[in-house]
Structures are given as C-alpha cells and as structure tokens.
Picture 1 (cartoon, protein in one colour):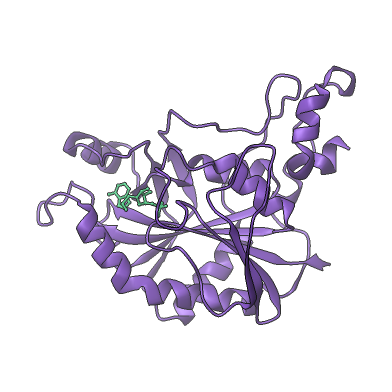
Picture 2 (spheres, rainbow, N blue to C red; picture 1 turned 90 degrees about the vertical axis):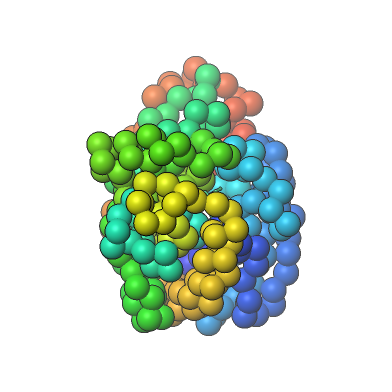
Length: 291
Ligand SMILES: CSC[C@H]1O[C@H](OP(=O)(O)O)[C@H](O)[C@@H]1O
Ligand SMILES: Nc1ncnc2[nH]cnc12
C-alpha cells in the first residue's frame, strides 16, 4: 500500500476548492516551466489533496496556452497518484443535458498546437492510450456523483478541439453524427495523454454546460450561457469532490488497470543512447523506469 494523493484539476469556473484542512497555495517549479498557477494543498477526511486551476486564478490561460506538461509534472512531483479533471463541456446528445455530468472514457484529439509528450529526441517512449482513463478512479467519480444526487452518465467520448473559438455548425454536426462524439471541450487533450506518460490514474468529469451548436431548439453556444450553467452547478462539483477521499482512502493498492506502470515497457531508447539532459528533465515523470 502507498499513500493516496488526489489531485483535482479545475476547469473553467472552478478556481479553488473549499474545506481543505491545512490549506496552503504552494509554488512548484518544473523543468517544463511554470504550472498554470500555484497548487492548493491540504487534507480532506485525512487524505492528501492537491487542487490546480487549469486556467489559473482569474482565468489567464487559453486552452492552447495551458502549460499541460508543467501541470502534470508538478502534480506527479508533489506525490499525486490520482488526477481528476473537472471540465465544462458541450453536449452532442439530447439525453446529456446541461447540468448533467458525464464520466468520460474516450477521447478524439483534434488539438494541433500543443506539446503532447514529455519524451523526445534522446529518450523515446510509446505508451498505450487505448483506454485513456482509469476505470477504478472513474468508478469513484461515478459513485461520488450518484451519492451527491447528480444526474451522471457513465462513459462518453470527448472531442478535444483546439479553440478558443467554438465549433462551426458543420463541425458540430460532423462530430455528433459521423464521428460519434458525445461531448466537446478544449482541454482534456493532451492532459490525459501526459497523465498516462506520468503513470498517473486519470479520470475526467465533464460538466455539461450547453448543446454546442447542433441543437435545433438551443441556438448557438455562448460563454454567458456556459458561465450561468457552471455557476448553477458549482455546488454539485464541490459535493462530488468532497466525497472522493472517503471513496478512495488514504492508502492505495497498485492500479488494477496498470495506469501506474504505463512506462514499464514503453521506453525504446537504449540506455547508452539516451540524452542525459532530457533524462534529467524526466526525473519526476519517468524516474521510476529511467533511474
Ligand atoms: C468557458 S467556455 C470554453 C472553455 O471551457 C472549457 O474549459 P475547461 O475544459 O478547462 O473546463 C473548455 O474546454 C474551454 O477551454
Ligand atoms: N460547446 C463547447 N465547445 C467547446 N468547449 C466547450 N466548453 C463548454 N462548452 C463547450
């Protein structure tokens, strides 16, 4: 058994969490630059917690400028074992209505302008993201949501777009009708891929804020509507997070799905051919297999 440390990455409209004992904002330096903000640390029900506002307090970062590598490295560096992403999303399904939550289990990555890996020339690694979210952590999120009285859908495909503009009507229809996506957002990629490289369990909780642009009765999406829906559902998100420590416990067994061993056979570069500078940068993320 090893100590659990639950990280929550808060998306649009979520810039802190309350109820942490010994709450303290801490600056974490990483070889990939500064994270989006300081990290709020503390304990909840005796379990170590860490909260990182994805866009920074005051919403400073665009979906493209979020320093995804620094964020994941920083969480790993301070001992986080499980990462729960909470994000505002548009819905492509009538039954996934604004105010509902979706525990996402698949992604289509349409982002084009982001650093997507910790690895590179001098240390090459290929991890599997066939199943990009952790079922054990997703189970806990689903139970927490149900216990909090949230209308929650288990499973769904998240289309990650570059943004910052929303989709055209033609794109919205294509993602929904031809590509089979269920929800749309701008941030879970490359976050989920990087969490896998860092051997962190990752679960994604999508808070539905709108029907994007495809819905004949709902017109086009706009930020005012998103913020209004987010504000109306903030308590639900807080309630869900508050239930996680009791469900996950302060000690954890190895992930039964192997998230925490994702790098076991992933590194291709021969030890003698590795770039020592890159290997040093990878210390927090991949030190387990590179040391
Ligand atoms: C506020 S509307 C668009 C914005 O909201 C979502 O952010 P996050 O995923 O961090 O909750 C979406 O991905 C866009 O970045
Ligand atoms: N419709 C939408 N498209 C992309 N990101 C979103 N975040 C919230 N709603 C969204």
